[in-house]
Image 1 (cartoon, rainbow, N blue to C red):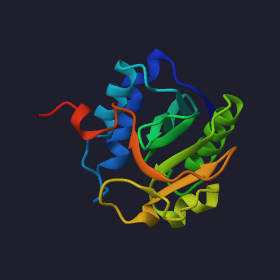
Image 2: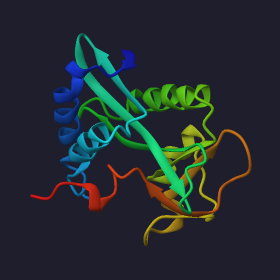
Image 3: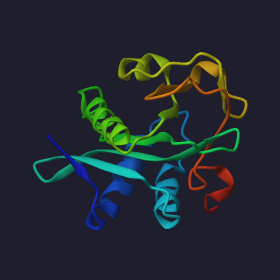
Length: 170
């Protein structure tokens, strides 16, 4: 498996991969592909990595700016992350996350936040201490990893390309 930054030639394959990865997920609202397009269109896709094997994309992860209580302050959000069905639970996502977090550290980021299953993301160092909130979600799903400075506290807001009011309808 080879991990690299996305290129313009990858965009359609990333969209198809994302749709396929989230299609069977009950929690998905099926807007993940549209969210990625919106992030690109708004210039908010800070890091976009693909995992490929034998010339085929098997995984993708995106990182974009987030605000906590309305202030960006060097924080980024992880997501969406997609792994091709049949390749899930084989370390592809873990490798993409590790590479992306390393790149964020190299950029001088303060930290990274996400919404997700704590049993999965705690293995990558993410924690939930109840200090971050996102909409009406239970606090254990709102997680963060701090690279420098104190742990944040407040309301998390993702890049406009990931917020519901920014996504195309229909």
